Image 1 (cartoon, rainbow, N blue to C red):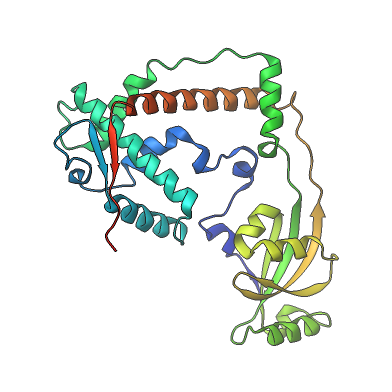
Image 2: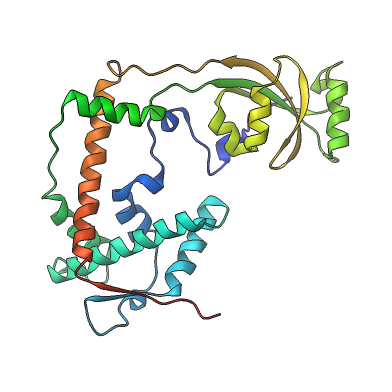
Length: 288
């Protein structure tokens, strides 16, 4: 039986074709921190950051880390690592700075207690001073080469996975593989998942790096038992499509837009970080 359900599609870390070529990691998106991560992600009561009498003092207490970990785990299925937690802290701080600046500019009139709207209005004031940067072909081509991985077409893999219920130990999967070499999943009352055109990074996210590496090195048409992050799997590589390098000339318009967005986003971030210098940020560690 061929299953239409695809665990790679429901994995919160799944990467579709377009995002593999053009997507940016959220950790490298300065502007997205402001609204998507900070304003809508952290619904921490404002008293957390305003316990100091001085309006130029921002207190970042353990509540921020706790909320960051909870939200990240709920959306990603795991706790953030040190770098991700640092990025979430910075996102919260960027939003707090924008919120304070918005209040100072009195853009909260008519929107009291609506934090995200105040942040958005303050960011709009910052954004008014951000201008599209001049560009030359040498700069654009250098940026393209630096970020080539976003535009190159990755190698893709077609493969199948036979799924049995009950015992899924290494011995059981090995026995299944030996039988599969003689018959078919349908004859064994095993489900069959069929994957087409999967890039390696997508397979890594669904099954793990070791699994992906061994699958890529497999001989097409041969059933194998491979260990994944979720246990042993009976899989067969069907076909491989080789990677293809992107052409700067063919991708020129996309690269120009991506470069412009990237530079302008960094300008916005720099402007907010400059405003942050007006504040004294105090970190309050959680008590053991």
